[in-house]
Image (cartoon, rainbow, N blue to C red; front, side, top):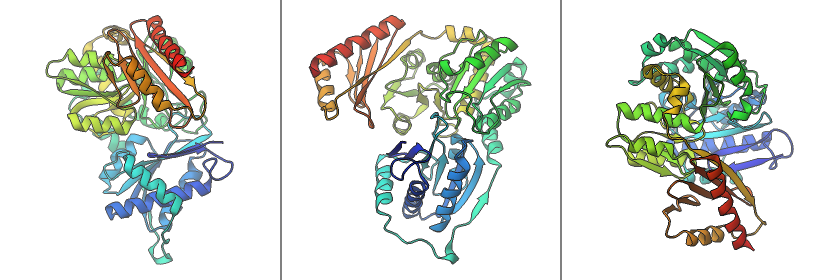
Length: 461
């Protein structure tokens, strides 16, 4: 059993003992703290909630809604929804905040409360710490019977969200319709099974092959949209002669594609392709996190009047950097596209519409589009350390070794070599260092990672 309390919310496995897993007691405690935090901060007694299709979703929803009512907070319940849809709904409803009931790409036994501010964006570090402190204290009264909160059910936000996507200046419905795309969709039996086909139909796609699109929470495979989990989608694309396949995670904020030949487009390249299209029409700055592919930087600098910026890992950090540099597009290499013309949050629906417009206007097959981008390969490793080891000191020692090589310490240590990079980050939950590297070939990416691992082991010994 696992319970992880972080600045952005609380997540864990369902069942077990309080404080050791995501139990009803933990759900009530954190819902109470967040509700009071929102009211104290904004003076608004309204919170928007939505959930993915996990088996535990209805149970968690009932606890969250009842708890919010018990402290006098009104609730707008979107029902089965997506993370970006709740993000869009919070400011539209004039709510003080939002809660998304989803464990994102985690397996079915997990669930979580993701916490949003009044802008529909994830709360920041200081706010998250305040909520955690309030949850441990719970020093406040509950509402009397005359002041209980009210619940409103609103299932219109799927269409509202889709309408906002279609209204984006860079989304060309006519071009997508005329392309006559045949598209296969794997929504891992969560809410993407409702939202993605509805979006494709609104975009004029007439041939949709649905795979695992029943929102019953019975995940047919590991829900993280990685190549090893998308074999069935790859086979369906080839069997049907589809132009491409689309895969999303359970809460529809991560997006990746399968090419017409059944090969992966590469989740790292979702943002690269969308960024390329956006920059062609609206030159400006781009942002991704330090562990994302260098290809976005390459695509950015090839566009006049555009600059690339790197942020610490985490959606909140990427959004902060995007606002700081007025980025026109940004996101994370895990298939998370953030398009501020719509909102500041990872949004697979916006990503799909922009990508299909780009593909339609290019006149290319998706494999040809992919071939036009810089080719990089990643290697992801980790070192398990002895508990109590000074990881910060270890990273400082590595920084000294590479003090004459371009590097960044805004999030662990990233070393930028001429043709490769390596990023070292300590885990917040385990005694490990994550080591991500990238190079022009798989062998070079792995070689630089192994070199760094050997040097770390030398320092430790």
